[in-house]
Image 1 (cartoon, rainbow, N blue to C red):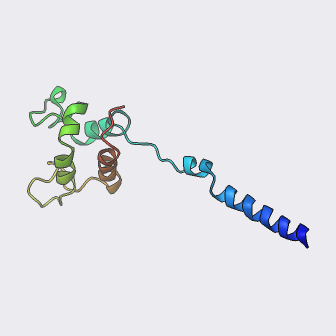
Image 2 (image 1 turned 30 degrees about the horizontal axis):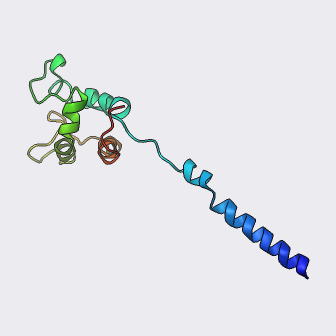
Image 3 (image 1 turned 135 degrees about the vertical axis):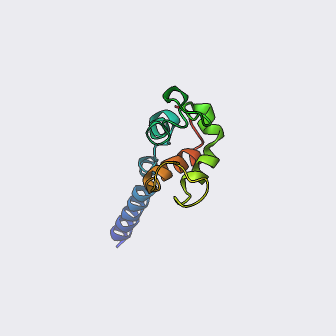
Length: 116
């Protein structure tokens, strides 16, 4: 009888430590978004030429990390507007950016506005 109780305790402890292992928490860690890897390309694709001076843009420049970081809240606010709303961006488009693109900007902000 003592063997069975000991076996049950041993199996229970093994299951407990397997479920609570730190390796599972490490596997769940998500990569943080950065300007260079996630945002710079989106800005070049969606904000050209107006916000890219090298492409002939005359609006506030978003072609560098500091400017994008400083203006991220305004950028998100304006890309979330409907095309019929005043201030909607991208200005010459008739449809909003995709949810995944908008969420990429939000994730970058929420991840701490990392550059690299």
